[in-house]
Image 1 (cartoon, rainbow, N blue to C red):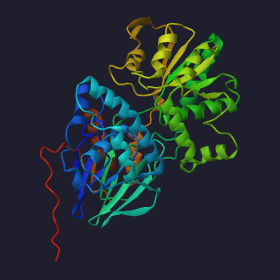
Image 2 (spheres, helix red, strand yellow; image 1 turned 90 degrees about the horizontal axis):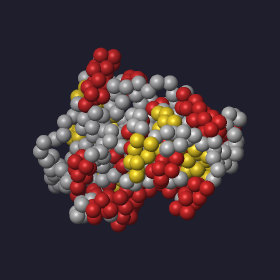
Image 3 (cartoon, rainbow, N blue to C red; image 1 turned 30 degrees about the vertical axis):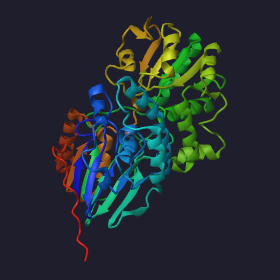
Image 4 (cartoon, rainbow, N blue to C red; image 1 turned 120 degrees about the vertical axis):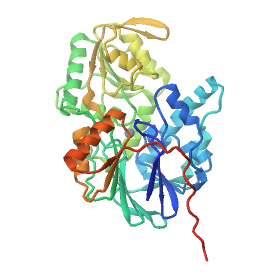
Length: 457
Ligand SMILES: [Zn+2]
């Protein structure tokens, strides 16, 4: 087997690995590059390989930096199957349709053609091939794959790939266990080679049990001050985890059952409905709660506001109230309207629960800026701002090492999907603690050679 890394190379986005094995080619993930404009411009470049020559895509999970260029791949001529868990395929379709609108809008502004359209997304679905966890399936003649729980978001998987007498494991993004709803990453017992993500290869997340405490403190504050709690949240996983924690706090009598909680994001609402379709993917505790008749994604004080008029009506509800809305880094979406309305009042509370990229509104608020501009107006920050990094969806260094330590027979570990300092730090620890050889892949400089054509008699 031969691997070429065409994305997530000393960076965290654009995951795209070309595998050449058994005289054919497949991809593991086909994600978008995200970040500054210069980075995102790379999404418009042609693929460095012939899309027709790719026979199959194995998709680890539904985050756009792993699935976001699939419609572009279709547009470029790919017609093979896309293997992923059923929940991943549902969430992928949702995310691709949502971002098609944004891509088309941005392309129009910049006077260029979008790198994919909704039509490409619609066509792509004919290639979707759902797979079950833990079942080894033949994805191409002579190539087998097994999808294992990755515990990162609903449906996420690590992939075991068997070809040419070798086994490679692709970690995908690994979760920050224990988390509500999801199972922990599966234990994989052997591999010849491992490709492992390194997002937090340098970091440690700290005490995970403090998640509920952050929510409890925030709710206590808005009850005391009759304020509004704003939680900017990503649509997939983070929103549902927060709902789970809030429902648990209500069940335990730690927060009142009558404070209205709004999920004010059409995307997060759609994602929540997809979560409800797949209770078989939940961990034992979450399954038990559902079986007991307590639906933590649809409880009494929880209100979904998909329509704009319902969203606006939240303004007229007396506090205390809780609003969960996107975008997760306050770069767009309905959360910006709530921030504009509530950020200058010291009775209110902003709880930041996810990684905030430099330059975003979320990052500026997290860094303690006291004045922000929204919709060309200046607003003084008087609301309480709290940051809870323990809500991260990624494994930290300790968890990555633990996952890798279970895999026996490893000849080499390829470290991808991380900024340089994270990858380098992780590389040192993998070598020292586990005594394994590591490689930090580089982006190939030249186009890969076409696959060898096997002569037939
Ligand atoms: Zn991810």
